[in-house]
Image 1 (cartoon, rainbow, N blue to C red):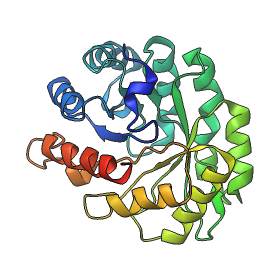
Image 2 (tube, rainbow, N blue to C red; image 1 turned 90 degrees about the vertical axis):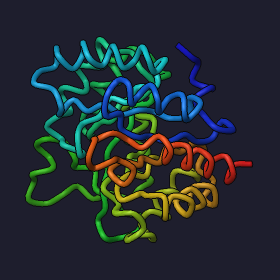
Image 3 (cartoon, helix red, strand yellow; image 1 turned 30 degrees about the horizontal axis):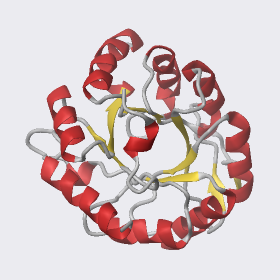
Length: 248
């Protein structure tokens, strides 16, 4: 498996995209020159055991650059992601805020990236952390200052905020506020939802302007071929080129 340092462009950023098949995942890995985490979703499997068997295969061809995903931020998948973390030792795990600590314990190391899914509230500087399978259904959400959320993520062993769904730049002020707090407090940032080739560069610029130490933009449906269900490799190359240009 390649070291963590080789994942990052200029030790600063990489992308996260979905792998539609093992072959597609391997093509993405090669096209990105190792600078992509490739997502595979637990929601796509009938049981955890099936997910583990298949994800081990993905992890092998990706040299560890596998991202274990929930599936459209589905909080009910938090248990499966944590279970997969016991058996599949990859570089990245997506997780509901409330199940970060369990996942970190199951991973068994401090190197893997475990993000904490948080979401919009409509107020810049305030984010919702009640993204677990029970808390997400609460009558009132748990909305807290970004700084407090970051401290809690650190308490739980999390690496980053996954801000999802952020709807591209429709809520730009909220995105900037989260990036600013991550930059100031040294937590990594994973902007997710509605990111495409048109707004990608601006989102990267926000992360750089706010001095985010490391960031991982997730680019999903906008670069998936609707007929094949596979991520377009040429679009992966375009995203990596933008990162290289912005980080030059």
